[in-house]
Amino acid sequence: MTDVASLRPLLAVLVSALAIPVILSLKSRPNVREGVTLAVAAAKFAIVASMVPGVLSGTQYVFSFGQFATGIELALRADPLGILFAGLASLLWIVTSFYSIGYMRGLSEHAQTRYFASFAASLASAVGVAFSANLLTLFVFYELLTVSTYPLVTHDETDEARAAGRKYLTYTFGGGVAVLGGTALVFFMTGTTAFTPGGIEALATADPTLARAAFALLAAGFGVKAALMPAHSWLPDAMVAPTPVSGLLHAVAVVKSGVFGIARVVLDVFGTETMANLGVDLPLAALAAFTLLTASVIALRQDNLKRRLAYSTISQLSYIVLGLALLEGDALVGGLLHIPAHAFMKLTLFFCAGAIHVETHTDDISDMAGIGKRMPLTMAAFAIAAAGMAGIPLVAGFVSKWYLVIGALDGGGLVFAAALLVSGVLNIAYFWPIVYQAYFESEDDYDDKPLIEAAFGGRSLATDGGDAETATVDADHEADGDGEDDGIPDPQHVDHLGKRHEDVEHHGGPPAEGWDQRNWRGAESTWFMLGPILTAATLSLLLGVAPRAVVFLRIVETIVGNLPGVVA
Image 1: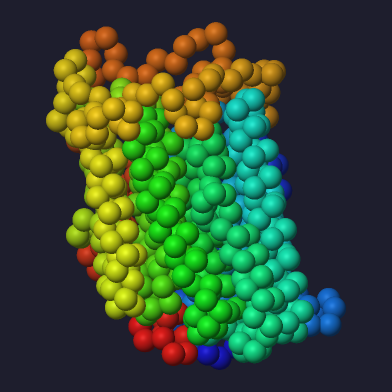
Image 2 (image 1 turned 90 degrees about the vertical axis):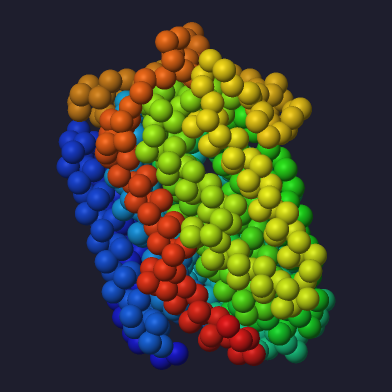
C-alpha cells in the first residue's frame, strides 16, 4: 500500500461536523434544515466514495494532526478496512435522513433540530472511527461517538429514556476506559499504536502475559459496543430511542464501531499469527458463539418488535466477531462482509418497525395478525430482510454466512460451524411468526404462537429487560422551535417502545373493524418512509445477488488479501 497525503479523510469527518451549527441555526425553518442534512449526507458519501478506486488499487489517503508527544500522533488514514465502514455509514446516512423526515414529522416529534444535529455529530464521529490511523485516534473518536449519540438515545426525555441513557453511558464509557488501558499497554510494549496489516511486529516478541492482558482490555472495551455478552443489556434498553436512531446508530454506526474496533485489533494490532500464538483466538470465538446462540434464544421471548430486533442484532454482531476470531481466510471474508450485509438487512427491519409504529401505533408482534393487508410493501420488505437474516439464498445474509460456515469448516471449527447453522434455524423461528401472522392470519382469527409454544413466543407478561412497566414524564416537553415556530404540534409523549406517558393508553393493533385494505402502490405510508425501506431492501438483494458489483465484497477481499499469511 502507498501512503498519499490528502485532506479527504479530514473533509469526510468535517463536512458533517461543520453542519452542526448550521442545522441548529435553522430550527425555525425545518424544510431548509432538512435540506441541509440531505445535502451534507450526500457530500459526505461523495467524499468517501471518491477514495474507493484509489484504495482498491493500493493507495492509502493519510492526514496527520501532528505529534503531540513522543510516539503519540493523531492521524487519519483511509485504508480498505476504514473505507468499508465509512462507505457503509455515509451511504446509509442518506437513506436514513430521508426516513427521518417522514418518521419525525409523522409522529410530530419534539426537538427535531437537536435530533438532526446529533445525527450529524454521530456520523462525523463514526467516520473518524473508520479513518483512525492508530489506537489513540480511534479511542478519541470512539468516545466522541458515545457523547454524540447520547442525546439520540434519550430523545424521548422520559424516565425510561433517561435510565437507558445512563446505562448506555455507563457501559460505553466503561468500555472506553478498557480501550485506553489496552492502548497504553500496547504502546508500553511496542512504542507505537499505529495500525499495521498483519499486526504490530513487536507484539510477537513482547511479554505474553502483558500481550494477553492488552488484548483482553481492547477486546472487552470494543466488545461493549459490539454487544458481546455479558456487556449487551444496554442495547435492548436503548431501543426506547426513535426508530431511525435504532436503525442507523444501533444497526450501523454505534454497534459497528465496536466490531470495527475488534477487527482493527485482530487484523492490524495483533495480527492473526500473534493471536494464534498467544491463544486468545479460541476464547474470543467461544464468547462470540455463546452470544450468537443465547441472544437468538432470548429473541424468541420478545413480543415487542424492536426488542426482538435488538436481540437479533446482538446475535448477528457476534457472527462478525466469530469470523474474525477464526483467523481463516474465508471466515475473515464472511465476518467482514457481514458488516454491510447485516446493516442493509437490519436497517430494513427497523425501518419497517418504525413505519408500522407511525401508521398503526402497533409495536407488539402479537397485535400484528393480518397487518400485511394494511402495509403490504412494508411487510414484503420485512420478509425479504428477515429471509436474509436467516441466511436464505439471494439475500445478503446468505453470502456472508456461506463464507463464515466454509471458513469454520476449513479451519477445523466444526463446533462453530454448527453454532452458525443452529443460529440460522433460530433466526427462522423468531422471524417467521411475524411474516406468517402478517400475511397468513386474520386479525379476528389468529394464533399468537404459530411456531413456538409457551413463553418463548407471542404475548408474555415478562419481557426481559424492564419493558413491563410504563414510565412517567417528569415534565412537559418543550418544542425547540419545532412546535409553534414551524407548525409542528407538540408531541404526544409516546416513547418508541410503544408506551404513552400521559393519561392515555396506547392503542396498538387492528381497529375494531379490522385492518384497512391498502394497495401495493404506496398508499400505506408516506414515500419519505417507504422509499428508504425499499432502498434498504433492494441493497440487501443486490449484495446477495451481485456482491462484487455492490463493491463491498471487493473491498473485503482487498482487506483480507493484504494480510500476510492469510489466503482469501
